[in-house]
Length: 79
Image (cartoon, rainbow, N blue to C red; front, side, top):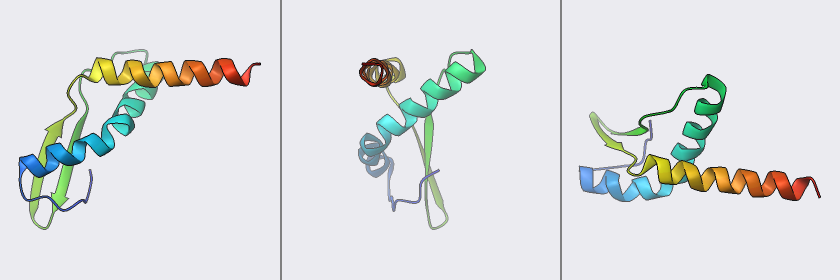
């Protein structure tokens, strides 16, 4: 969950861009540990007594970006 102030799903969708890599990194890590694919990442933005839930679009693409960074850093660390 996140505590950024939101008033609507539009606000939450705009904020989601800030958390895209975080969600993808969690999905990448969970999938590796659990040896199961992660099928969805959802963020719940809490503001006062309201909760707005948004799902990370293109999870596969976001995870692929994280995998590329991990692979590159792992490779670079080995040199």
